[in-house]
Image (cartoon, rainbow over all chains, first blue to last red; front, side):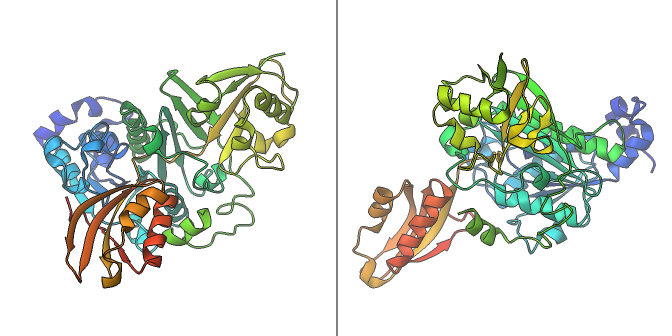
Length: 267
Length: 171
C-alpha cells in the first residue's frame, strides 16, 4: 500500500511510533472492525477507530437518535434527533476521516443475522446495552473465533475486557448466566454519568487497535473495573472456567440462543 | 481484624452510599454474613438462599475470583480486599413503541389508563386514529422490560393487536 501525502501527514503521529510505524498504519487501514451499538460506548469508540484510520468500520444499530441520548452519545448532534444512529454516526466519521469506509446496518441483531454480520470482520466490539445481545455476541464470536472487545457500564461503574476465543476466557466464563429482570436496576431508574461511556468506549477502541497491530498486552484474561465516583481503576483476574457452558469442558451451549427465548429464560 | 469490602454502585443504596466498607470474618461467607448484619438486605443481592454466590455476581478476594479458590469458604486474612462485581449491561432507558389495533368492541374501554394504573409504566400516545369502528394508536411504553411485557399481555387479553414499531416512523 502506498500512502498518499495527505495520509502521511494525517497519520504522522502514529507512523512515528515504533509500535505502529508505516506497516502498522497500513494494517489499520486494511482492517475491518464491527461496532455493535452506536450509542454511549459506540460513539467514542467509533470516533477513535475512525480517526485512527480503520479501513472498514461496520456499525450496527436499529435505533434512532433521541434527545436524551445526547448527554453521552457524542457523535450525534441536536440536528440528528430522529435520524438513524448509524446514519448520524456515518456522517460524523466522514467528517473526521474520508479514508474510512463505513458500512451501516440498520438491523436488530439476532441469532439469525449475527453470523453473517460478523463473518467478514477482524475484530468485534460489543457496545450494546442489554444482556440478551451481549450473550448472543459472545457466543457468536466464540463459534466464529472472532476477537471480542467488551465494555459495559452502569451509573458510575464501568467494565472492560477482551475475549479471544481459543486463547482466553469468554463472557460466560465471567458471568455464566444473565441476571433475572428486577434484580439489577435498569439505567432508566438510575441513569448513567455521561462521561463514563466515553472512558470505557475509548478503552475499547484502544484494545481493538492493539489487537489489529499485535502490540502490547490486551485485557485478555483481565477484567478492568472503573469506578468513576471514586476515580479508581482495579483489575481482576479473569480465568477460563472449566464449567463454562460455552467454552468449558462439558459445554451445554452448542448454538446461538435466540433473543426472544433468552428473554423467556430470564423471566 | 479488618477486611475491606468494595461495594458496586448498584448495591450502594444499601450501604448508605459508601463505596467501601470495613468488616471482619475469616471466610468469605462470614464476611458476607457480617456485611448483612450491618447492611440488611445486601446478602440476598449477592447470594442465593443456599449461600451460593449468584451466577451474575462475582466475588473477588484481592484480584482472584473466589470460584477458582474455595468459593465462599475461601479463607480471608486481615488487610484483604473483597470486591463484589455484578454483571452490568449499561445503556439507556427501556422505551418501546407499539401500534395498538383495537377491535370495535374495545374502543370505548379505558385500556391505556388501566395500563398506566396497573403496571409500573409511563404511557405516551404519539399518534392515534380513532372513530366509532376503527382504533389505531401508536404508543410509547416506558418501564422495565418485564412490566412492558406484562402490559402487552394485558392489552392482548383485551383483544388488542399489539405490533412493535421497529422503525421509528412516529418521530
